[in-house]
Image 1 (tube, rainbow, N blue to C red):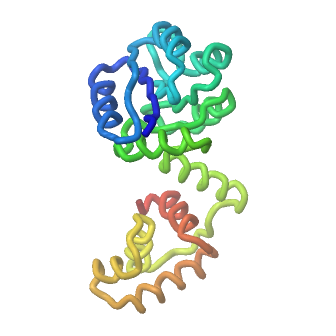
Image 2 (spheres, helix red, strand yellow):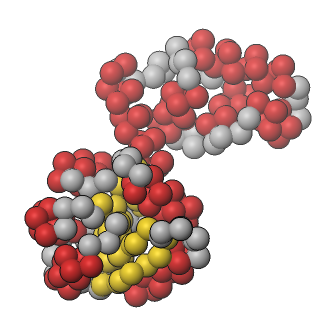
Image 3 (cartoon, rainbow, N blue to C red):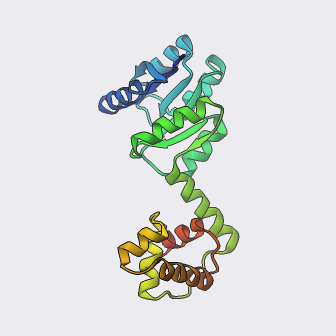
Length: 212
């Protein structure tokens, strides 16, 4: 099986070592080079033409965004996934506008890096779920004017918090020591009170009211 060739760029050696170990542990990918600065990275990537470039957005000598621009000419077939510490939608939109195919938060689980590489090498765009969730919430709040400000009961807040954290109806029922039918009833009441239709909107409301 031909492996996905990955090049890593970050000015933190510990992070590079960790990413190298994670990627080389996968049967379908391998690290073919690393760099601590942008200038070395640009020349190395242009020479090696890896499938994927995992690129820190903040480098000491040159912004990762400028690296994207430079590599458009010198390594246009290499797909770029940006790495950042900051969940800033401005960085995300600018990176995508310049041609990045993915955007990952450094603090995300290791599985997100692997998922990003596999998705991007197959022609898809990959956005870290945390950022994607923030974008959905921003879009929904702008489109709808934000959630209704009706007060929930204490028990409804408890139910909403667990559902927004990803608990299933059964897991929520077990946590609160009630029946699944009771949770379904609370969930229906919450949606009706707040005029919400989906779990994504429940999550957005919970974030907006600092319930999670």
